[in-house]
Length: 278
Ligand SMILES: [Fe+2]
Ligand SMILES: [Fe+2]
Image 1 (cartoon, rainbow, N blue to C red):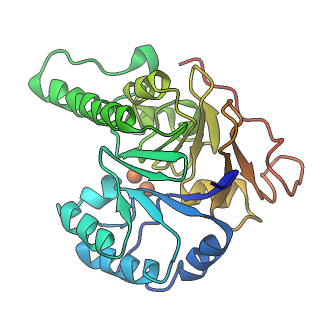
Image 2 (cartoon, rainbow, N blue to C red):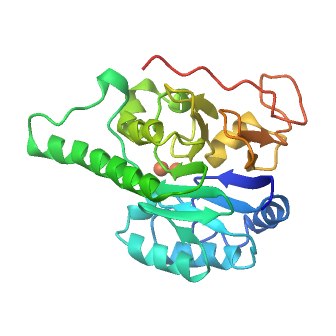
């Protein structure tokens, strides 16, 4: 069994009808650098099966395992099932409350949902439509919890579209924070002592944060990476140290430069943003 497993993480690629070939060089680069590719939702722009076919074509030559979840854009045209099937047919592991394991690293994935963070989160009270809205986030958290309960590996990596914490949506307009994620998604992460979390959706959010118990959370939305790592390759690369199990057993590697920070070739020693008080 290898000592390290390399993960390349990226989200919100929003493939459209005109995207054919656009990220193929990036996918080739990922396949050369990593053992596993993670795609955190908003795989398509309008949620069209046609867009998923174009993405599937670009992903087909990628020979490393690809793990993905759907995002809200993938639901826009009610063709999400077809999108999942198209991508599954080219070998993508589509996770929707499901798990997948690679050596001693387990992956659990859900889309997640919104509702806000901390004590200001929306509660299931009043109109039925509000209760239904909150129920959706609760259901996603339950799906994640039962997926995590099935994983036997020492390392548990979670992939989702929405954010489980406030820190990685900061940078967006505060008015839309409640639509970018939900603290309800944080509870299962804590309960199952997850190793690291990857998400997207908040295109103007922050790249790193931590849960209240210190679990690292990475917002790998394409736009976030382009803004914060302008000299980087357009994805983030991480090493999971399979022999150790502490809060730094997943470390970013190869981040060329983070805007506003000292230039560095290795991101391992870079601090992760403090969690927000929400
Ligand atoms: Fe997106
Ligand atoms: Fe999204």
